[in-house]
Length: 120
Length: 383
Image 1: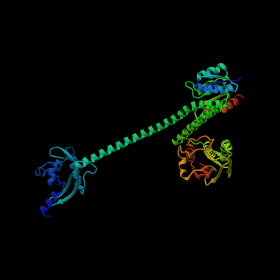
Image 2 (image 1 turned 135 degrees about the vertical axis):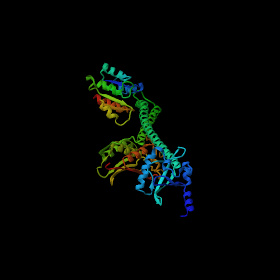
Image 3 (image 1 turned 90 degrees about the vertical axis):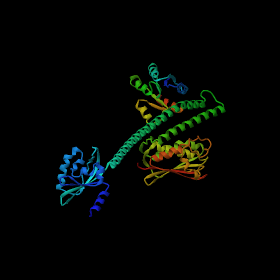
Image 4 (image 1 turned 45 degrees about the vertical axis):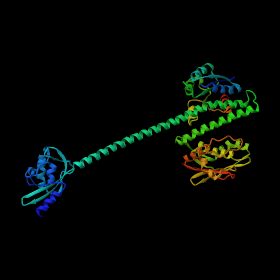
């Protein structure tokens, strides 16, 4: 079973993604902040990571900077999840090393498709 | 001239008038001279004129007098300088003096007409002070204005930041409301009865409506504060028309509305592709919304001078002519939409109009009640 790590500081956000992905047959792990996400990633070596950009403390950009600097996570698909709708945010995320970009509110099918595409 | 009349003339002058001989001795003076300098006539007659001049200037004055003797003419004395008279009591006062040469049996003499300009200087000084005060005040006002404009800039920036973060904060909970209602509606967690299904659908629809509102308000406030930056790029308009039609196709098919296009030529324009598409999609979804089952919606495009004109025409409910101007206003809605269509935000046309205008184009509507509508907008071919 493929492992997916979901980092979001809001519990409802985590539960939504967890439910959708578990229904699709993935094993889902949760992190409640950026630091936890980095630690969990080291511990679990997930096949895919979904990072909320906007987290207190170490945010999504901080997490990806940390992970991408390590050989082990150089190729791990990482999706940015954000409620921001500003122009240029997507470009910024892709430049930072994200492989996918999903805006909140997510369409469930869009999320399923993006995860499936990256884990194919 | 008889002596008496000459005397009267001399005394009628408001200025001090005195005459000095070749050696600079005072030989004639009027009464004003006495009053002005505080001397009695007999104290001055025969005295060198220098007694009426501040001590430190007397020596130089003797020189000036000699010089005047060699080049006599009628002129003002000490042009551009502030001349001063000296009273008997030692006090000084500003004067203006005009000189004229003359001669008689006794030889050369000079006439000096002396005007006390204390009052005028005072007025001058007051005027200058007022002027200075005014200049200062002006500078102060300028500083204040500058400060104010910086404050406005700052407030504007804060407003934008506030809008950005508000949009973010509102979307975050909306994200889970929409997500969970969608999840419930999928019934993967267990079947819902008809009523439950409908309720969940209501939650989902209204959440989506709220999302539309947030997006539109953010868009509109960006446009209105001049912060919406267009990103012009060359592209083929035909492709954008095709994409826009694709995005309303499902909605149109659900109501059996035929979608047609009539495009003259391939049209290469330079504009913000995303925004032009937003305009077109907005007009198309309005057209589909307000057209009853079995109707037609059509996109026409053609070149008009240096503009490309795009027209979205429908066979829908139409808009009465009294409403033509109002429909581009914020939150104006033309009555109820047809069944099964997501409610609008009332901001679509306001945003559309501003987007078109920011591109340098214009938009207008031709419509009558129950006769369908034609919205036409133009975009410059080349910016």
